[in-house]
Image (cartoon, rainbow, N blue to C red; front, side, top):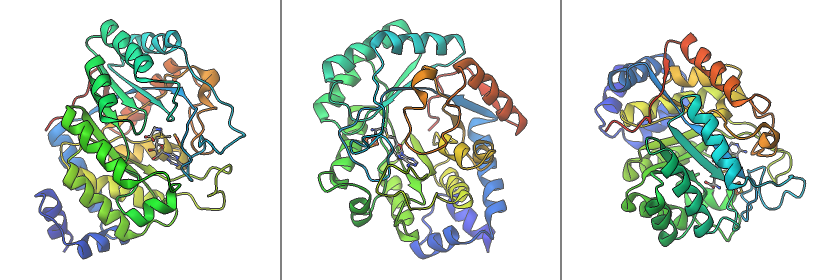
Length: 344
Ligand code: SAM
Ligand code: FES
Protein backbone atom coordinates (compact mmCIF):
# COMPACT_ATOMS: atom_id res chain seq x y z
CA UNK A 1 0.00 0.00 0.00
CA UNK A 2 2.64 2.55 1.00
CA UNK A 3 4.74 1.86 -2.09
CA UNK A 4 1.76 2.78 -4.19
CA UNK A 5 1.21 6.03 -2.29
CA UNK A 6 4.86 6.99 -2.56
CA UNK A 7 5.00 6.11 -6.25
CA UNK A 8 2.00 8.32 -6.91
CA UNK A 9 3.61 11.20 -5.02
CA UNK A 10 6.90 10.68 -6.86
CA UNK A 11 5.35 10.49 -10.28
CA UNK A 12 3.63 13.72 -9.43
CA UNK A 13 0.29 12.08 -10.00
CA UNK A 14 -2.27 13.65 -7.78
CA UNK A 15 -3.31 11.61 -4.84
CA UNK A 16 -7.00 12.14 -4.23
CA UNK A 17 -7.62 14.56 -1.35
CA UNK A 18 -8.86 11.76 0.90
CA UNK A 19 -5.67 9.71 0.42
CA UNK A 20 -3.48 12.74 1.01
CA UNK A 21 -5.43 13.53 4.17
CA UNK A 22 -5.02 9.94 5.37
CA UNK A 23 -1.28 10.13 4.71
CA UNK A 24 -1.00 13.34 6.71
CA UNK A 25 -2.79 11.77 9.65
CA UNK A 26 -0.75 8.60 10.13
CA UNK A 27 2.83 8.02 11.25
CA UNK A 28 2.77 4.57 9.65
CA UNK A 29 4.66 5.61 6.50
CA UNK A 30 7.03 8.17 8.02
CA UNK A 31 10.18 6.11 7.58
CA UNK A 32 9.25 5.12 4.02
CA UNK A 33 8.39 8.73 3.17
CA UNK A 34 11.68 9.94 4.60
CA UNK A 35 13.73 7.41 2.67
CA UNK A 36 11.93 8.11 -0.59
CA UNK A 37 12.26 11.88 -0.09
CA UNK A 38 15.97 11.59 0.65
CA UNK A 39 16.42 9.52 -2.52
CA UNK A 40 14.67 12.16 -4.62
CA UNK A 41 16.65 14.95 -3.00
CA UNK A 42 19.97 13.18 -3.59
CA UNK A 43 19.08 12.41 -7.22
CA UNK A 44 18.47 16.13 -7.86
CA UNK A 45 20.79 17.95 -5.45
CA UNK A 46 23.25 15.28 -4.29
CA UNK A 47 24.40 15.87 -0.73
CA UNK A 48 24.58 19.66 -1.19
CA UNK A 49 23.00 21.98 1.35
CA UNK A 50 22.63 25.63 0.39
CA UNK A 51 23.06 28.33 2.98
CA UNK A 52 21.27 31.67 2.94
CA UNK A 53 22.49 34.55 5.04
CA UNK A 54 19.44 35.94 6.80
CA UNK A 55 19.50 39.64 7.62
CA UNK A 56 16.55 40.64 9.79
CA UNK A 57 16.77 44.33 9.05
CA UNK A 58 13.63 45.73 10.69
CA UNK A 59 11.15 44.48 13.26
CA UNK A 60 8.73 47.35 12.77
CA UNK A 61 5.51 46.06 11.25
CA UNK A 62 2.20 47.69 10.39
CA UNK A 63 0.41 44.33 10.39
CA UNK A 64 -1.14 42.54 13.31
CA UNK A 65 -0.96 38.85 12.36
CA UNK A 66 -2.34 37.05 15.43
CA UNK A 67 0.50 34.49 15.59
CA UNK A 68 3.49 36.79 15.20
CA UNK A 69 5.66 38.16 18.00
CA UNK A 70 6.60 41.37 16.15
CA UNK A 71 3.01 42.30 15.26
CA UNK A 72 2.15 45.99 15.55
CA UNK A 73 -0.03 45.29 18.60
CA UNK A 74 2.86 43.93 20.66
CA UNK A 75 3.75 47.07 22.61
CA UNK A 76 6.39 45.14 24.55
CA UNK A 77 8.52 44.52 21.45
CA UNK A 78 11.61 46.69 21.35
CA UNK A 79 11.77 47.99 17.80
CA UNK A 80 14.88 48.45 15.64
CA UNK A 81 15.92 49.14 12.08
CA UNK A 82 19.35 48.49 10.58
CA UNK A 83 20.95 51.28 8.57
CA UNK A 84 22.02 50.63 4.96
CA UNK A 85 25.61 50.61 6.25
CA UNK A 86 24.83 47.95 8.85
CA UNK A 87 23.06 45.83 6.23
CA UNK A 88 26.09 46.06 3.92
CA UNK A 89 28.36 45.15 6.83
CA UNK A 90 26.28 41.99 7.38
CA UNK A 91 26.69 41.13 3.68
CA UNK A 92 30.45 41.71 3.85
CA UNK A 93 30.78 39.40 6.86
CA UNK A 94 28.54 36.85 5.16
CA UNK A 95 30.45 36.94 1.89
CA UNK A 96 33.70 36.21 3.75
CA UNK A 97 32.01 33.20 5.33
CA UNK A 98 30.97 31.83 1.94
CA UNK A 99 27.38 33.02 1.71
CA UNK A 100 26.23 33.65 -1.87
CA UNK A 101 22.62 34.47 -1.08
CA UNK A 102 21.48 37.28 1.18
CA UNK A 103 17.92 37.30 2.47
CA UNK A 104 16.64 40.67 3.62
CA UNK A 105 13.69 39.97 5.87
CA UNK A 106 11.57 42.30 7.92
CA UNK A 107 8.14 43.30 9.10
CA UNK A 108 6.03 45.44 6.79
CA UNK A 109 7.79 48.64 7.72
CA UNK A 110 6.52 51.73 5.83
CA UNK A 111 9.86 53.46 6.52
CA UNK A 112 11.34 51.24 3.81
CA UNK A 113 9.78 52.96 0.84
CA UNK A 114 10.55 51.69 -2.65
CA UNK A 115 13.26 54.34 -2.97
CA UNK A 116 15.03 53.34 0.25
CA UNK A 117 14.76 49.62 -0.32
CA UNK A 118 15.80 49.85 -3.99
CA UNK A 119 18.93 51.77 -2.99
CA UNK A 120 19.88 49.02 -0.55
CA UNK A 121 19.18 46.27 -3.08
CA UNK A 122 21.20 48.06 -5.80
CA UNK A 123 24.13 48.53 -3.44
CA UNK A 124 24.20 44.81 -2.61
CA UNK A 125 23.76 43.89 -6.27
CA UNK A 126 26.68 46.13 -7.33
CA UNK A 127 29.00 44.99 -4.55
CA UNK A 128 28.24 41.27 -4.91
CA UNK A 129 27.31 40.56 -8.54
CA UNK A 130 27.82 36.84 -7.93
CA UNK A 131 25.24 36.68 -5.14
CA UNK A 132 21.47 36.26 -5.13
CA UNK A 133 19.44 38.90 -3.32
CA UNK A 134 16.27 37.59 -1.73
CA UNK A 135 13.59 39.83 -0.26
CA UNK A 136 11.02 38.88 2.35
CA UNK A 137 9.22 42.07 3.21
CA UNK A 138 5.58 41.13 2.83
CA UNK A 139 2.79 42.43 0.65
CA UNK A 140 3.54 45.35 -1.66
CA UNK A 141 2.13 46.70 -4.91
CA UNK A 142 3.03 45.17 -8.24
CA UNK A 143 4.82 48.41 -9.17
CA UNK A 144 6.91 48.10 -6.02
CA UNK A 145 7.85 44.49 -6.78
CA UNK A 146 8.81 45.57 -10.31
CA UNK A 147 11.02 48.38 -9.03
CA UNK A 148 12.79 46.06 -6.59
CA UNK A 149 13.32 43.49 -9.33
CA UNK A 150 14.86 46.15 -11.58
CA UNK A 151 17.08 47.21 -8.68
CA UNK A 152 18.51 43.69 -8.61
CA UNK A 153 16.42 41.47 -6.34
CA UNK A 154 16.22 37.90 -7.70
CA UNK A 155 14.06 36.04 -5.24
CA UNK A 156 11.10 36.74 -2.97
CA UNK A 157 9.80 34.79 0.03
CA UNK A 158 6.16 35.32 0.93
CA UNK A 159 4.49 32.46 2.72
CA UNK A 160 0.83 32.23 1.79
CA UNK A 161 0.27 31.12 5.45
CA UNK A 162 -2.89 29.13 4.60
CA UNK A 163 -4.75 28.63 1.34
CA UNK A 164 -8.15 28.46 3.05
CA UNK A 165 -9.99 31.79 3.30
CA UNK A 166 -11.78 30.96 6.56
CA UNK A 167 -8.57 29.77 8.21
CA UNK A 168 -6.76 32.85 6.87
CA UNK A 169 -9.40 35.00 8.58
CA UNK A 170 -8.75 33.29 11.92
CA UNK A 171 -5.01 34.02 11.73
CA UNK A 172 -5.16 37.60 10.49
CA UNK A 173 -7.08 40.80 11.21
CA UNK A 174 -9.91 41.74 8.82
CA UNK A 175 -7.84 44.30 6.90
CA UNK A 176 -5.63 41.50 5.57
CA UNK A 177 -6.84 39.13 2.86
CA UNK A 178 -5.80 35.83 1.34
CA UNK A 179 -6.80 37.24 -2.02
CA UNK A 180 -4.16 39.97 -1.83
CA UNK A 181 -1.53 37.55 -0.57
CA UNK A 182 -2.17 35.29 -3.57
CA UNK A 183 -2.18 38.28 -5.91
CA UNK A 184 1.26 39.21 -4.61
CA UNK A 185 2.62 35.70 -5.20
CA UNK A 186 1.36 35.50 -8.78
CA UNK A 187 2.60 39.06 -9.50
CA UNK A 188 6.05 38.16 -8.18
CA UNK A 189 6.14 35.09 -10.35
CA UNK A 190 5.04 36.95 -13.48
CA UNK A 191 7.67 39.63 -12.91
CA UNK A 192 10.37 36.96 -12.96
CA UNK A 193 11.34 36.44 -9.32
CA UNK A 194 12.17 32.98 -8.03
CA UNK A 195 9.28 32.76 -5.60
CA UNK A 196 8.86 31.08 -2.22
CA UNK A 197 5.49 30.39 -0.60
CA UNK A 198 4.69 28.25 2.43
CA UNK A 199 2.87 27.91 5.71
CA UNK A 200 3.22 27.07 9.39
CA UNK A 201 2.45 23.55 10.52
CA UNK A 202 0.09 23.35 13.47
CA UNK A 203 -0.99 26.97 13.33
CA UNK A 204 -4.07 27.61 15.46
CA UNK A 205 -7.30 26.15 14.00
CA UNK A 206 -5.44 24.41 11.15
CA UNK A 207 -7.15 21.22 9.96
CA UNK A 208 -5.83 18.37 7.82
CA UNK A 209 -8.12 19.62 5.05
CA UNK A 210 -6.41 23.01 5.27
CA UNK A 211 -3.03 21.35 4.71
CA UNK A 212 -4.39 19.44 1.71
CA UNK A 213 -5.56 22.79 0.34
CA UNK A 214 -2.10 24.26 0.99
CA UNK A 215 -0.55 21.47 -1.08
CA UNK A 216 -3.07 22.07 -3.87
CA UNK A 217 -2.31 25.78 -3.85
CA UNK A 218 1.42 25.05 -4.06
CA UNK A 219 0.79 22.72 -7.00
CA UNK A 220 -1.02 25.57 -8.77
CA UNK A 221 1.68 28.15 -7.97
CA UNK A 222 4.69 25.86 -8.60
CA UNK A 223 7.00 27.94 -6.41
CA UNK A 224 10.80 27.59 -6.51
CA UNK A 225 11.02 27.55 -2.71
CA UNK A 226 8.65 26.34 -0.01
CA UNK A 227 9.05 27.59 3.54
CA UNK A 228 7.39 25.25 5.99
CA UNK A 229 8.10 25.16 9.71
CA UNK A 230 6.18 24.55 12.90
CA UNK A 231 4.00 27.26 14.42
CA UNK A 232 5.53 28.31 17.75
CA UNK A 233 3.82 30.22 20.51
CA UNK A 234 4.59 33.81 21.46
CA UNK A 235 3.08 35.04 24.70
CA UNK A 236 2.51 38.63 23.56
CA UNK A 237 -0.05 37.59 20.96
CA UNK A 238 -3.74 36.65 21.02
CA UNK A 239 -2.57 33.03 20.61
CA UNK A 240 -0.64 32.97 23.91
CA UNK A 241 -2.60 29.91 25.09
CA UNK A 242 -2.15 27.88 21.91
CA UNK A 243 0.18 24.90 21.40
CA UNK A 244 3.37 24.63 19.37
CA UNK A 245 3.03 22.79 16.05
CA UNK A 246 3.98 19.08 16.03
CA UNK A 247 7.45 17.88 15.01
CA UNK A 248 6.40 14.63 13.32
CA UNK A 249 3.77 16.28 11.14
CA UNK A 250 6.25 18.99 10.07
CA UNK A 251 8.78 16.33 9.01
CA UNK A 252 6.09 14.31 7.23
CA UNK A 253 5.03 17.39 5.27
CA UNK A 254 8.66 18.15 4.31
CA UNK A 255 8.96 14.64 2.86
CA UNK A 256 5.65 14.91 1.01
CA UNK A 257 6.78 18.26 -0.41
CA UNK A 258 10.11 16.82 -1.59
CA UNK A 259 8.29 13.96 -3.33
CA UNK A 260 5.67 16.20 -4.91
CA UNK A 261 8.13 18.96 -5.89
CA UNK A 262 11.47 17.17 -6.52
CA UNK A 263 13.16 20.37 -7.66
CA UNK A 264 12.09 22.61 -4.82
CA UNK A 265 14.38 24.54 -2.47
CA UNK A 266 13.20 23.49 0.96
CA UNK A 267 14.64 25.00 4.13
CA UNK A 268 15.10 23.18 7.41
CA UNK A 269 13.82 26.20 9.33
CA UNK A 270 15.03 27.93 12.47
CA UNK A 271 11.55 27.27 13.91
CA UNK A 272 12.15 23.53 13.43
CA UNK A 273 15.51 23.88 15.22
CA UNK A 274 13.75 25.75 18.01
CA UNK A 275 11.04 23.10 18.42
CA UNK A 276 13.60 20.29 18.78
CA UNK A 277 17.37 20.38 19.42
CA UNK A 278 17.94 18.22 16.31
CA UNK A 279 15.06 19.72 14.35
CA UNK A 280 17.08 21.07 11.45
CA UNK A 281 19.04 17.84 11.08
CA UNK A 282 15.79 15.88 11.07
CA UNK A 283 14.44 18.33 8.50
CA UNK A 284 17.42 17.72 6.21
CA UNK A 285 16.98 13.97 6.52
CA UNK A 286 13.29 14.37 5.69
CA UNK A 287 14.05 16.12 2.39
CA UNK A 288 15.08 19.71 3.14
CA UNK A 289 18.15 21.10 1.33
CA UNK A 290 18.54 24.67 2.58
CA UNK A 291 19.49 26.28 5.90
CA UNK A 292 19.21 29.95 6.70
CA UNK A 293 21.62 31.00 9.44
CA UNK A 294 21.40 34.46 10.87
CA UNK A 295 23.73 37.24 9.73
CA UNK A 296 22.00 40.00 11.71
CA UNK A 297 24.12 41.84 14.30
CA UNK A 298 23.93 39.95 17.60
CA UNK A 299 22.54 42.95 19.50
CA UNK A 300 19.29 42.92 17.49
CA UNK A 301 18.76 39.19 17.12
CA UNK A 302 16.67 38.73 20.26
CA UNK A 303 14.46 41.61 19.19
CA UNK A 304 13.38 39.83 16.01
CA UNK A 305 11.33 37.50 18.13
CA UNK A 306 8.57 35.95 16.03
CA UNK A 307 8.19 33.19 18.62
CA UNK A 308 9.75 32.30 21.96
CA UNK A 309 13.13 30.65 22.63
CA UNK A 310 14.39 31.27 19.11
CA UNK A 311 17.77 29.58 18.70
CA UNK A 312 21.09 31.11 17.62
CA UNK A 313 20.33 34.58 18.99
CA UNK A 314 23.63 34.81 20.86
CA UNK A 315 26.19 33.53 18.39
CA UNK A 316 28.30 35.52 15.96
CA UNK A 317 27.70 34.82 12.27
CA UNK A 318 30.98 32.91 11.97
CA UNK A 319 30.08 30.70 14.91
CA UNK A 320 26.61 29.99 13.45
CA UNK A 321 28.11 29.08 10.14
CA UNK A 322 30.69 26.72 11.72
CA UNK A 323 28.10 25.11 13.96
CA UNK A 324 25.73 24.51 11.06
CA UNK A 325 28.45 23.13 8.86
CA UNK A 326 29.22 20.51 11.51
CA UNK A 327 25.58 19.69 12.12
CA UNK A 328 24.95 19.24 8.40
CA UNK A 329 28.03 17.05 8.03
CA UNK A 330 27.01 14.91 11.00
CA UNK A 331 23.85 13.80 9.18
CA UNK A 332 25.54 13.06 5.87
CA UNK A 333 25.24 16.25 3.83
CA UNK A 334 27.58 19.06 2.86
CA UNK A 335 27.27 22.86 3.08
CA UNK A 336 28.42 24.42 -0.21
CA UNK A 337 29.46 27.92 -1.26
CA UNK A 338 26.97 28.48 -4.05
CA UNK A 339 24.06 30.73 -4.99
CA UNK A 340 21.98 27.58 -4.77
CA UNK A 341 19.55 28.28 -7.59
CA UNK A 342 16.63 25.99 -8.18
CA UNK A 343 17.24 22.93 -10.39
CA UNK A 344 14.00 22.56 -12.32
N1 SAM B 1 6.71 40.43 6.87
C1 SAM B 1 7.12 39.41 5.97
C2 SAM B 1 5.98 38.50 5.60
O1 SAM B 1 4.89 38.68 6.12
O2 SAM B 1 6.17 37.65 4.76
C3 SAM B 1 8.30 38.61 6.47
C4 SAM B 1 8.44 38.43 7.93
S1 SAM B 1 7.33 37.25 8.64
C5 SAM B 1 7.76 37.40 10.35
C6 SAM B 1 8.06 35.71 8.15
C7 SAM B 1 7.31 34.44 8.50
O3 SAM B 1 7.45 34.14 9.87
C8 SAM B 1 5.83 34.45 8.30
O4 SAM B 1 5.54 34.20 6.95
C9 SAM B 1 5.32 33.38 9.25
O5 SAM B 1 4.97 32.19 8.56
C10 SAM B 1 6.52 33.16 10.17
N2 SAM B 1 6.09 33.30 11.58
C11 SAM B 1 5.54 34.38 12.16
N3 SAM B 1 5.18 34.11 13.43
C12 SAM B 1 5.50 32.81 13.65
C13 SAM B 1 5.34 31.93 14.77
N4 SAM B 1 4.78 32.35 15.89
N5 SAM B 1 5.78 30.65 14.64
C14 SAM B 1 6.36 30.23 13.50
N6 SAM B 1 6.52 31.01 12.41
C15 SAM B 1 6.09 32.29 12.48
FE1 FES C 1 4.32 41.65 10.44
FE2 FES C 1 4.74 39.43 11.71
S1 FES C 1 2.97 40.72 11.83
S2 FES C 1 6.10 40.44 10.40
